[in-house]
Image 1 (cartoon, rainbow, N blue to C red):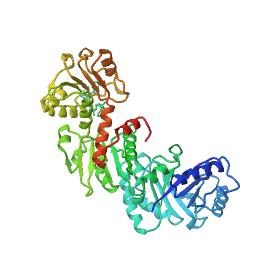
Image 2 (spheres, rainbow, N blue to C red):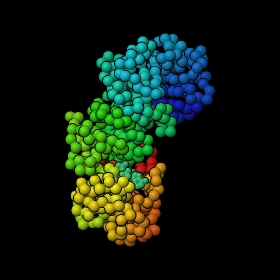
Image 3 (tube, rainbow, N blue to C red):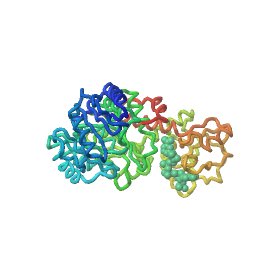
Image 4 (cartoon, rainbow, N blue to C red):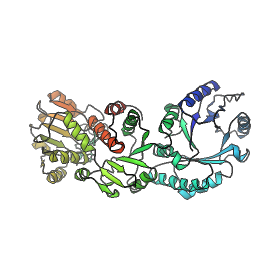
Length: 473
Ligand code: NAP
């Protein structure tokens, strides 16, 4: 059984006591008291909680001082003291009262090396090691090591740090870790990827996990949207980041199976390259030429689909456009444009494609029976104009991807860019008095809601997802 261990890092005994009370009511089952957080180490150690297992931790160079403080902590009710593997205090206290710890803040070594580290640590106490997780390869090394460590039946603590390591914390029970370190509040997190006590208690030992992969993933807002949907639906579920380079993407299926991840979103730059790694790709994803959602069935079989199409269709419906017979212009010839062209042509729309590189527009148009039109030959008369280029997105060119002269009061405009929500195209559309204009936020939320429903069988609360769009995960 994995204990939810609240990290108490406060600068006074009174603040530590208040934090302990808050943690207990949130579901803490153990405490790590960070003595190094105190402004001054108190003489009286009665602040140490005694109702649950307690680890006293004090990172400092002053070893003689530490020796006395640790001894006092043990006689004042601490269950364990945390002694680093390279400390001169290693071996000073009884093995049964020590957590012997090792941290690597840059990488995760190979499983055999992790096991070597654990063999060494276990000679001095309960072995604890935390490794920085960079992607799928590191997650698999931790998993392989955990399988061997569990066989001994002896207690151990194994943690993957960083955003990519969050899944090791959520699956701490599967890993066999004795403890999962949690923050009392998000702002008190003492290590990257640490979740809160309340969230760990809400999730329990066997939550649903869903994920997103791509590279880089720092800016994705999907975790906050999906986690809000889990909470709104009352589902014990957590959506985690698994950043993956192109080189490590082939390891993703094994990561999904080992960590029992029910489904994953796939984003730039892996939407196409993930396809050969899957057991099956559904027709809509084949037609769009991209997978943005993977479903993992209980046997570990991976199916790829594309919910961007659902997002595009929902946005077009919101604009009160019936695709059959609608005249639509799509600017762009990349993945998002392809998804729009494939679903609109299938629905009977007359689609034109324009693009900076016209050769790509011609190839795309030819594949779906659309018409390629160079920018300088475009004229008014479209019911709908879709921007499927990054023009207007923060950090990208702020050009308007179509001539302003084709923005007329009969036209609706759908700019797939959602960051910012007001783009130069949408501003020009407003000036031109177009019938309706929307950014890509509704599409993003609709595709996320469609993925959520595929994974959980429960309709996503779009309002909760929308509210979380600007919030924290
Ligand atoms: P992509 O595959 O890289 O394709 C980008 C397309 O945009 C290419 O056709 C490219 O033209 C064109 N382009 C790039 N920079 C341009 C510029 N400065 N001016 C004019 N055209 C430019 O990207 P994608 O995945 O299709 O995504 C395109 C946009 O859609 C992104 O902004 C993305 O954020 C947005 N998107 C939104 C959602 C949503 O849910 N709202 C979902 C998916 C995508 P060349 O062929 O000449 O390179």
